[in-house]
Image (cartoon, rainbow, N blue to C red; front, side):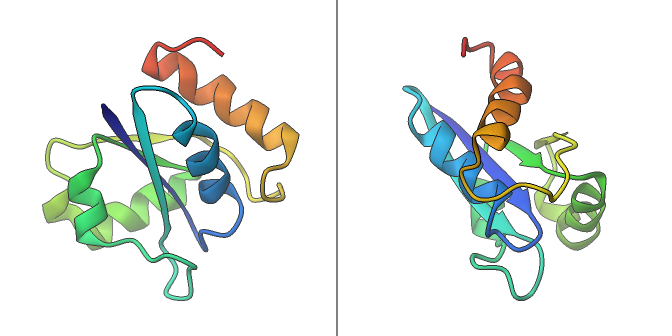
Length: 110
């Protein structure tokens, strides 16, 4: 079972969409969190430690994550998906983009 953590700013649109999409795949567990103090679900050291692979939506998220949680990121694979904050929750274009970027990295078919 691969454990995937998806991170964006407020955990309202992109990362919860990714969590919903990839939770449906056999052999994957997915969770999501936000980096901002007012995120729906805030990032925690527990969820970082739980994850096998961490996906961030933007380079700024990777920087913020590294700055605030460096001791917990040792041996963690962090991948930036470069998905801008211009999609709605479960928007078909966002779902397609997430699958297009994430599935090849996991060696899974769409």
